[in-house]
Length: 289
Image (tube, rainbow, N blue to C red; front, side):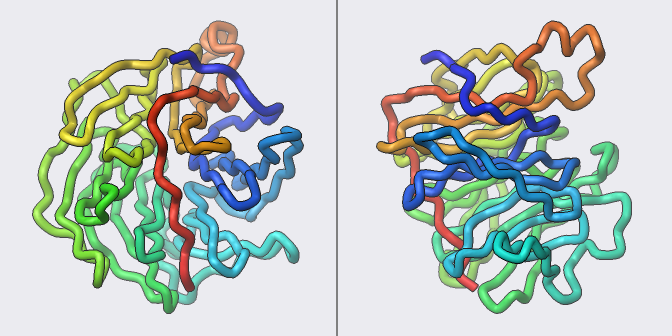
């Protein structure tokens, strides 16, 4: 498998890729800029929207809006009015040192998102769940960098990465009430390898973007390593499945924290890439609320 650069968009810190199989649109965020791109798959034409705050993660809603995890917590962005509406009493609204970083929508249409300190120094990150009625709950604490998350194809297991602990956790998942329990280490990495965002395919396998790693690492459902797919960029940040048959892995990258010399060595930093696989991804649910 080979990674190829796609789309003429240039995020500084690309993250949070999302694929819409209905409109054939690809989305990704430029995190610290507070923007996201909406790209037409066929033409490559892109529109950029700025939500007004650092934007860690976004997802599509049933009602056509965009649900977001931003600096101040949860909100909804309306492309028609270019307005961000925060959820009342949003969980992070008075916490200046922390922001939302990554998230996903569960099979029942609830939105999960987690936080980190801007410098990733301390274990003050939390995992939140936004419910259909726009109330929210805290599900996990003491996380350093809350990152890539998703569910097994049967919806019975939830997975979440803590980048600076070099681990992917698994939890038993009660899909009826959206509760997590019985945390275990599902995949662990050496101290010098940093898992970032990820995608889970229809067979339950993991495709993990490796920050500072120049690669996507592919594991089977049990967590057994299968292969590494090289990318010509140091900071690989996240991925999702898309394309006509949902077998194309769409990858985001970053030029954040690269020195002038490293930028010269990483001319494609920030670009998006496609990788053709022989495994179908899962259709990502939409937020129902």
